[in-house]
Length: 114
Length: 116
Image (cartoon, rainbow over all chains, first blue to last red; front, side):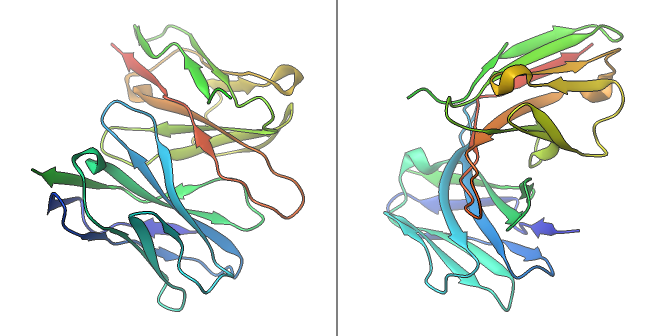
């Protein structure tokens, strides 16, 4: 079974600075997808960024980028120029290529200090 | 284009009662998923539908749980004889899957269930 591990329960960053959230996963599949979702307090989960395993290039979405290390099974999220609105729970998730369900990590709570 | 909606947003019930939640997916999405999220944890998969067919169920989905998606549109999740351990946020998500492509799952706001 696939597992996703987020080793940082909480992280803190100063506004305008950069922070990196870690995620590792375990799979024997070669075709899969990885996602970072953001869940603000009492609000719904929204997609931040996604990465297809077959793509070597790291995905980027504005201030958000990933460092995808396939051999190491690592998928970290970098948030640049952190803003107060970035404060939320961040979940890393895995989906097998031909599969259906998302497998989530335990989450990292990000706090942004003004 | 409206997102995924869920009703009710909050439900408080007494142990032993039955509850039903509703999810309305994004209109063109053919897949619908249910997840459960307990406090401080990541969501866990419960079940999913491809159109009206329920194709996969997690072992977390005990026989007290039943889900339907009549006509392949909205879905309902019913929990019978609720237990305190059922207290959680129930999340619905939808996606469009065709062939070998994988679309993103878009989540609703969830229904928070509290069983007293």
